[in-house]
Image (tube, rainbow, N blue to C red; front, side):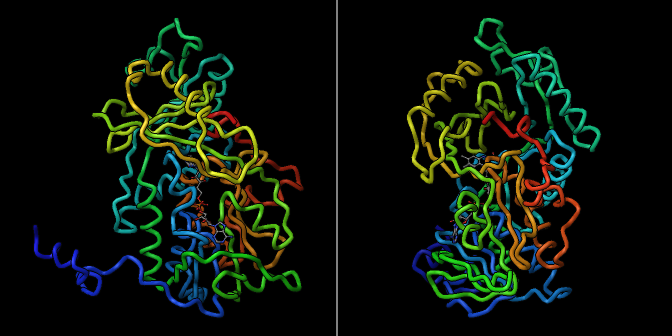
Length: 420
Ligand SMILES: Cc1cc2nc3c(=O)[nH]c(=O)nc-3n(C[C@H](O)[C@H](O)[C@H](O)COP(=O)(O)OP(=O)(O)OC[C@H]3O[C@@H](n4cnc5c(N)ncnc54)[C@H](O)[C@@H]3O)c2cc1C
């Protein structure tokens, strides 16, 4: 065993300059910050990173704190199935996620941490003529915006994914698919920790176990966040709390058009590489990919009722497996290893809510339902721009909270992963 490892194990490592900790031990909170971000998931941390990197000098955004009621990256960031793609249905959505894909591809180098970003190719199966039509529609929108995407017939699908059961004898035979070659997976913990470490090195304070209990508002301005570790005054406040968005927004009097429902997923025991594509069936409500360590990562639709609880259910597992085995009968002897849930904050149009609010200095990052991991870099970068400059970046304009008052929805139900 290397001597350095023994030293580290005995505790000398923490004090050694050769083994700097990713984060320093918790500091006392300050009384005042330029920006307080509530929620240390990927989104909140990415926003802090880009604020510190791009706006400390130009806009004087120097004192930044990210607070989390639990531990960093322990919310949906830790619970998601890491699919990254840009093959959305609307021009607004496609352009937005395309930028995120680009940022994701460079993220390991940007943050000096291996994101295990792995382009696999993403297949959205079509079992009906209507689904084939949507696949063609999406492919045309995607191509128009320079996103690599095509509707393919069954024969081509058999070539790209020979593991799939393409028999006519199944209950829902597969007619073809939308094929998106850049569709990828990455390591979710690395995304959270990469942003956290890089932000922390630029002076961002990350306070874990610090819950926002209330937000003080005066003269249409958010004044301070009342937390379990004191009151933090701030020039600007950002909320990025995913499944808890409606609860927190209600503290400043905002009513969000969001439903919060559990979303479950599971993994199998690890097997040798078998499936190199990400396969999604909107009609069967299932998706599957194989992780770098060989586990099949599988998920389905959201639970059918609103609930603030992350328990796992037997119904989910049974439904999911029934359909997964229709697609891949050869997995019937594989054991399940783990199952878990997160909280999805669903908007009526299946698009996120980002940007300014009716309060002058209160910004929102919410409505990420089942699709927000892939948006972590672009959302962080553009939210930082919005917060620092107080101007809404072009990419964020369609996703303003006001769209629900103006009836300018960005309908993504046909492309939001599996059916909901
Ligand atoms: C099972 C599952 C599968 C998914 N699969 C995918 C996928 O394949 N691809 C994809 O793009 N997306 C996927 N998603 C969605 C994705 O995980 C989320 O949209 C994304 O992680 C949201 O990131 P976030 O940083 O906004 O939220 P989170 O990571 O949830 O962070 C929010 C943080 O806010 C904290 N918080 C909440 N309330 C307070 C408070 N009052 N005070 C302080 N802190 C607070 C929480 O503790 C949490 O750490 C999936 C989600 C789930 C649950």
